[in-house]
Image (tube, rainbow, N blue to C red; front, side, top):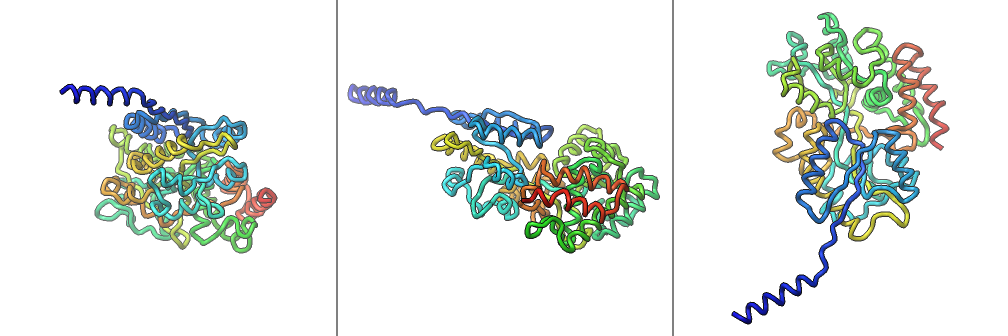
Amino acid sequence: MRLIKTILLGTALSLAALPALAKQDIIWWDFLSGGDGVRMKALIDAFNKEHPDIQIKGTTLEWGVPFYTKVRTASAVGEGPDVMTYHLSRAPLGLEEKVLSEITPKDLEDAGLKTGDFFDAPIKAATHDGKLYAVPFDIHALILYYNADMLKGSPYLDANGKLTGIKTLADFEAALAWLKGKGVPTPVTYQSGGDAGVWRVFYTLLSQQGGEFVTNGKVLDGDNAEKAAKVIDTMSRWREKGWAPEQAEYQASVALFSAGKSAFQLNGVWEVPTYKDLEKNGKLGFKWSAVEIPPFMGKRATWADSHAFAIPNEGAKTVSGEKRAAVMKVIGWMEKHAIGWADAGHIPAYKAVTESADYKALQPNATYATLAEAAAFDPQTRITGVASPAYDASLNIIAPAIQGYMSGADAVQQIKTELQGKLK
């Protein structure tokens, strides 16, 4: 007995002599507000509870230009976060600004991940010159929302209340005309008066023609110009016919659908929780769902981007060693628990989650998850992506053209004049 006590005492003294494991505080920046922000904060809280040795200290900054300006400035002076959310469409400009640290094979190993775990499109968007610079978290894309009640009695709703019979632009416009004839004020709504909403619809319809915004260092070169003009003229026709709203800002475009004044909405997957919550609380007076955007102009394609996790490059202060391994552990955990993020409408980029039974039970999410195969990411250039010159052109050139101030062909010429010089 004395020997056992002596051994136990010695063990206790030895343990007491060991240094305590250092807690790693991970400084985290994101730009996620609304439903996205609520769900991300829930994930952060869950991680922190499970990992007393690693604690995420999160800060949410303003989306768009303010966020990326802050990241660029902070990186330059070595005052950036340990990890941040980042749009993959912004990665080319981030590399030019030297703010993205390479995610190495060792980093992925520390996270318990490999590139084959993800859908191809976001991995391709995160890879430049053969190197990975971010870990994709989702695919968020434009989808087609519809009000099933408004479509009752039309050829566009099947016996189960699901959208049917809309495969081409002619089909879609026939549906819009049918709705207008039934007294629907605005058959289809989207952010027609804002840069992001206009760009997403424009780029979707351009991509559905096999069009490319930038080819071989040239903006809308060759027949891409004609395809772009066709898109702009189509969007203008929707406005002229009274099918789409006049210069609707984002919240107004959403309100048209939620208030039952539009039967269709072209918007991102991130509004799915908005309608789920309204429906749950008895504040949505109609049945709704959402699908992958039909191939209106020939081929399956829809504008898409990814929220991703990135580590800022801060020179000698770039996160390394044990802290970097802890950051990658955070990223790996987030990927494997992305079902909590899928609830925000997004398609997890980590295939194991998207292919899980839990995800397949999410509706309408599982219905439009097919768009992962048709995701059309912005070109990998310095003039495209979130808060880019292309977004400026959408607001200053394409939106006015949609409102009838110029033809599609004239708008395309202005876009080329405005953006070509900025590619260099």
